[in-house]
Length: 173
Image (cartoon, rainbow, N blue to C red):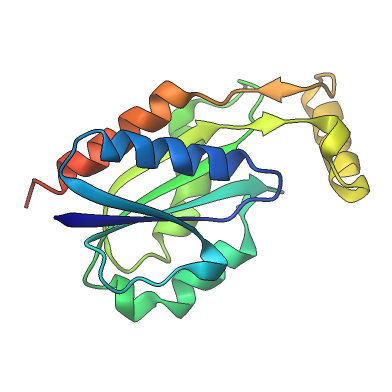
């Protein structure tokens, strides 16, 4: 049975939620074993396909995910890889640009054969933000000309579909 490892980091939980939905989508195909781990607990050994995800903060993936890619460059070299990011955009930027802007940063560091990439909407609960993050989001919202409000762009269906796609890729050479 093929094995998929989904690695993520998160600050407020959205990326963890998306990672679990991706896992459920992959597992729904029935011929794979899927494991989900925080980047701090990840061990690549014994997995056929590695999925790596990060939220976007201040226009960049989390440093922990970037560091993981650098530290595991040699191990990733012979693996199939998928990358995803979770971000709250306000609809002003086309998805293709988001892929280029955010996933390209990870893709440049991933040594494996990158077979799939995706950008997912996130969830922003302004009441749960740290003071620093609240100020950053407030400034960004002001720059974009939008109110700083709760935002929920999580899409379970899309995440499960991505997971199923990854499981399908395991069947392709």
